[in-house]
Image (cartoon, rainbow, N blue to C red):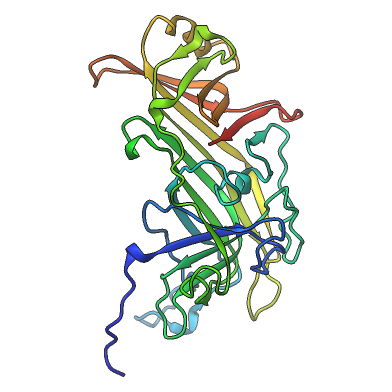
Length: 341
């Protein structure tokens, strides 16, 4: 065979995502649709690689023994990380509904959250968005298929950031999904929109610019806590583990489970001024507070306790960054995070 002259340009990569109908079946939910994400950089690409395990080195031999090696397929979790524009909520795919496992225009993570049923073959409840189907177009470049298709994807973490001095003042989302299912090679994306699958293109939806937002820190119901903010960041993550496998042919997972609790952190940076006299009351005393950013059809609220504060002097004015640990009473439906971009 002659050396191939084709290649896969990174600028040509597309990402299509939608809520799955049945866990592991790869079909979009009847109440949902596929959406093309406005990627800001190429995603991570996995191609069914599995870990190699090795037994203990035997005495009397001086090279690795291939008979004591095994490529394990029974416990693998593949990760797909996507970085994209924090566009205004128009449907599935933004990531928060998949991480919080709920439906709505303002996505909320509540104190009494419990994970959905992630059993292989279970019918997804659309209100929970338990798993997603992710296509990466133009990433395979094989003889008969140029796209990757990942089924049974669970959102593991999201980082949301929005600031005046980053990404042109527009929000950025980095989401990580995991799946225990092997990638499928296809031409569904390369064939074009509407040929094998149909998706909504949201590339022109950039969300709002930071300069049009307002913010409060501490008691978000009072104007005494208004601040001139420069940006914020929020990180929500959880551990997802796969449970066993169904057979030794495909090694599809029996189920997924969430291990432990969410790790929820946030921070906001703002101009130090006289309103800070009220805000610093939240630095001690276990007083639950919040920060909130508001704009046109845009509302982000974060509730919890202050974990740190820093007064930066690297700018022409002092800028305070207050870090928060998101938390609530786990016996209530009180909101820890509410995100509506």
